[in-house]
Image 1 (spheres, rainbow, N blue to C red):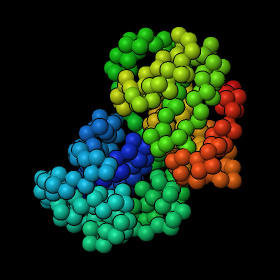
Image 2: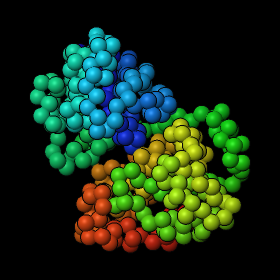
Image 3: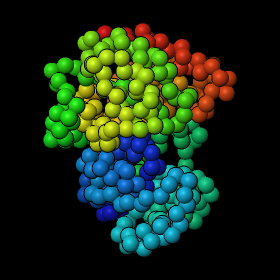
Length: 329
């Protein structure tokens, strides 16, 4: 049966939303006439507009730990009868409530948190495959993929007008190569390369490059510690998500931890230089062929813990600035 209207319900984290574009691309490659809407927090409304596969964003503003039952019921009433199928990428109970309440005929997803009646098109994955996020996403539609085809890799559109605005605002010399540093990670310190390493790398690069430091307002103090001269600007907390997309489009490189900004960079023209600690590049890699990964893979890694239970963070500390500097040669 051809699906005319499809609702995608991703996890509301930056990296997950970027990776969900793999699924959108697969749907469009197999069913080009399917109209795809995506359910996101208003924070990501401007981001999904950069995905040409999407018809429109359906907005639900609900916190990560908030059930928001009344909000979900009201939204379900508004969209009832609008969709033939929903694909729920999150494994939580609350993420499956809206398609159930909206009586969407085909509700695809994993069993997750005992969602027996909420999901009626059940997809099963091994524990290992479940951790391969993008692989799992594209396999939610039709047959299971064995290998993630590069044609499904995310690709976010740029906005030339906004690039000009940003270039003027921050007095960027586009004749000089730009590097993005993304030193933060919302997950926790076990994903964060030491700030001293970023600072040391910046000192090695600033003569030949202009360095922009991107991140949330919570990471502004980290950016301040990295900046050492006029060829570096700390923009943490000053840019929108789509500003970050456009700045990455005009940058040669992005040095980042395994974070949402890493996935954002992989969906633009920049080379992704990615640093992994407690997580694995085999499971959530930057989805681009233009990348270089730094990962030690020591005996206790990947542990997927937010903080190092041994307190040494050797999986990150052992990666030296000189190691990453070689990625620019």
